[in-house]
Image (tube, rainbow, N blue to C red; front, side, top):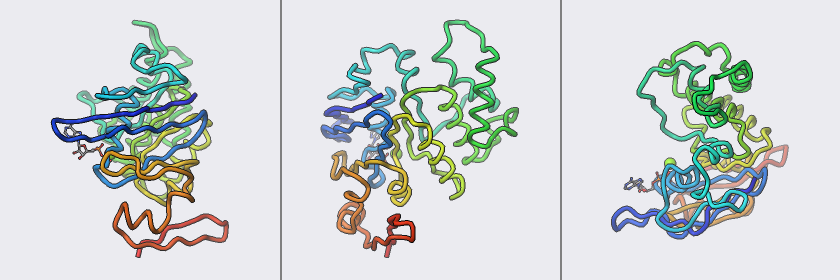
Length: 251
Ligand code: ADP
Ligand code: MG
């Protein structure tokens, strides 16, 4: 499934947050969105997962404009792990993951054995099986993040949108989460804070700054010392490890 955002513009009052931004991810491609805080990454992703209606431009899913699809239909295609999640009520982990099954149900249709099996499998995949009966609000930030990924997995979509999914996670779980996502074989667009993780996992990157795409290409093409100096105002060196993986050292 291909997802694209075409000439997206978002403004709040006189502030143009996104200025004609175009990005896409081809079928099964893992695309990373990088850029300093406040550059517009979350705003762009919100347009792509339909929480925000862009003031200009449109989002297309395999050639169909997203705003022409029903919410249910688009939720059958796109799952999201957003940055801030809080629930008004105290749901259990099982209930939170079950929400991922909702787009596949008819009105008032009950959850069945298949839904529960998918919930168990999704929790197993993120290593959170033992927490199934716990209340979501009592989990640590990192545990909540893994449960939210499980909810997205249970949704069984061909496209996944992630907004800084490795925030709150220790390095073990950062790598675990990104490996799970990489192995899903679905289309992924993810904002990623950590440039080294972006370099390890993404097929292609877009860099946003002040609401404009300032660089795009493979991690090797984008992540240069000049780029890091211009966009982040930090000096760096790029080294290769014994497996030929590139690493950025910040000086
Ligand atoms: P990022 O995810 O790259 O850190 P965001 O997309 O969250 O950036 O924010 C981009 C800019 O838009 C920021 O300057 C932020 O303050 C501003 N912004 C986001 N949402 C709103 C809003 N609802 N009203 C006004 N400004 C907003
Ligand atoms: Mg953000």
